[in-house]
Amino acid sequence: MKKIKIGVIFGGCSPEHEISLLSASNILAALDLKKYEVTPIGIDKTGKWLLADKSLPMLDANHPKTIHLNKKVEHELSLIPGKNTELQCAEAGLQPGQLDVIFPVLHGPLGEDGTIQGLLQFVGIACVGSGVLSSAVCMDKEMSKCLFKQFDIPTPDFLCFRSHENGKIDYQKVIEKLGSPVFVKPANAGSSVGTHKVRDEAGFHNAVADAFLYDHKILVEQAIVGREIEVAVLGNDNPKVSVPGEAIPNDEFYTYKAKYEENGVEFVVPAQIPAAVTLVIQDLAKRAFLALSCQGMARVDFFVRGNEVYLNEINTIPGFTKSSAYPKLWEASGVSNQELVDELVQLALQAHQKNKKLKRDYH
Image 1: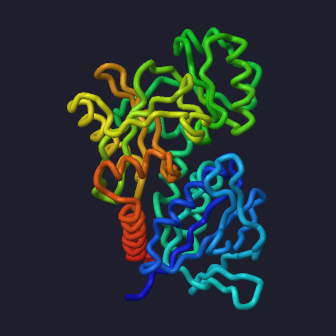
Image 2 (image 1 turned 180 degrees about the vertical axis):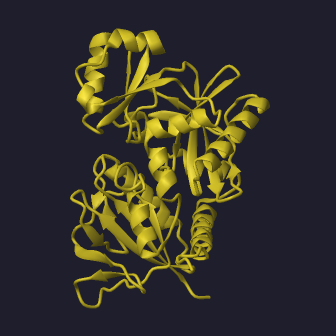
């Protein structure tokens, strides 16, 4: 059987560069080389696309703090659009050529926000995961939360501020609206980058200043004191939802450190919650996935307080590291890493074929 030509893109220019490398390392390991012809594509922190060494695309692959692209082999790539879209490399004999599908493993801005999805759609290559609209909306916490409310999906109350308001935000008015404590976070970031839980005015203003380092727009959000429950979603028009898992961080909340450092979090799968609450969570996850036009994959995060369930956010390119919830949730639901990656590739190819059937002219 003819092998599927797949490009795996990782790295990128976001603060989650290293997490992207960790995720890509596990995805590359899960790809069956009997089924796939794999082209690893690394994007360095300056935005340069590199044809990675297939045998060793990254160095220190098991260390979150020191993992980095293998630049001993540094062949620059360019994506050439046209009838036969292909990747081209300046060096002779290293042409990866045409690809059937690309798996973007780019967490955070310039990867998870619709930018790479738009590029791939424009040049006509199938892309694993959500498209432009849902990627952009889910990345932007203000927009996604507004849509949750529109679709009657419960989510914590919030306020949104722009960078021109930095230094002018009235703390007293914020806590009158949202109570205390509150979370302060960039509107467009992931992995809890730039996120703080604050209880006083001095901490609030420090948190606001830090969050504005990562985005021109920030959210101040009501803190729901409860349990952090996550589910994984897989599919296109008829998605399925995994069993729920509970993140119990060894920190005040689920920080970047708790997510990626050893022993930073205890992740319990399946979560020990009532069956009725599980059904509510799974239903809300599926409703939100479809309402925001997601495709392929997503991790959906909830706060649970008693029998009250609040949807926090949807992550359209969830982590695939060894400690990440998304693959763990599917493994607990009976889907291995290899089966998961295979299904994601097939979902991308199916969505691409469906899109190709749309008329592109009008007579």
